[in-house]
Length: 366
Ligand SMILES: Nc1nc2c(ncn2[C@@H]2O[C@H](COP(=O)(O)OP(=O)(O)OP(=O)(O)O)[C@@H](O)[C@H]2O)c(=O)[nH]1
Ligand SMILES: [Mg+2]
Image (cartoon, rainbow, N blue to C red; front, top):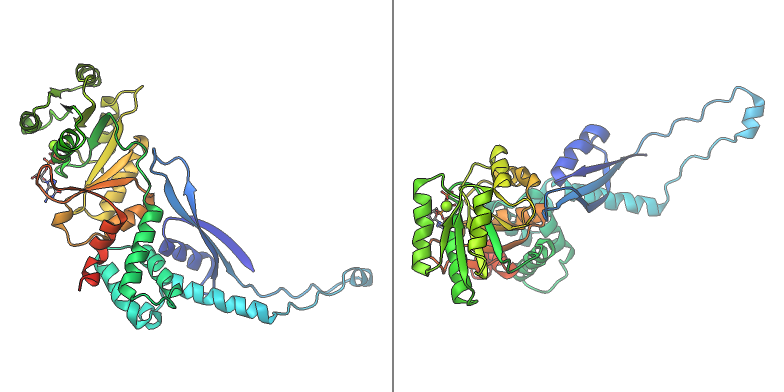
């Protein structure tokens, strides 16, 4: 038997390598989640460690050329497969089929097929689909209606993958992200929430001097909320502004939207943020963006510590699968989701129940 172990991000990725190295008859013996170290800040990446094996023909025992050797090395008895071994092989074969998504429609019970279609429609990755559906398969004895069991499984999955934000009320927080995702609007929402709900004093800083209207935009929110706004262009000026606002309970820093698919913009951010003081950093991404592009952006942030992800524009897309994909891939600390343009109302907590409803609400309430 030849054994090989792979570290991959998704199961399909492993299947390609296993097929290439061990051929079509390979069996998956073990799959476990492991964390890779060294990824930026709290965003530690989950990897899959997959061990696969393929049976090889036993080499015939070499013919002895000397009678002495024959006596010293008695011929090995042929390997006998016990019934136990056969049962184990059958089990491994079915596990392999499940993992490889071979003919899913044939094997998936009728009751689970609409769930697979729903997950597909929501843009949920294959590996996540398999994880969710295989749990439901195992629980097929369960009496609960399949929609309820699915909803419960979604909640369990989200709870398992959603990392808590380390500091829920940072005194200084910076918002970064691609162009037009809603950073400034979200800052206004958070500022209003801090002022009205938590009765904290708030100061705003904008480092977005890139767009002419950007300063005016934050200043307008500052006037409406009656909070001070500082404008900065450099790390030194930022230090000065933080000092000027030090009496505020909460300071929120806005930054210019940049194409963070290009790593050079991340260097600009590094040059702006203080070297010695950690500032709670929230990466803002729009749910209308492509998942692959989000992955590319998050990957580029390895060099900068990100404490939290905030997703916006939930109201502009019917598919929320990207949330499951991101949680599964990065165990990301996701605390809030923006659901519209209204300041301050359209900002909600990213609770497991709510996310599960985004994915499967239509099934339950049908
Ligand atoms: N539908 C919807 N629109 C939003 C949401 N959040 C922000 N917007 C809108 O998106 C547009 C851009 O918002 P901004 O807050 O200026 O975005 P930004 O990330 O600061 O943009 P730049 O600073 O230019 O990078 C505005 O029209 C907002 O009203 C949301 O959750 N849903
Ligand atoms: Mg802005």
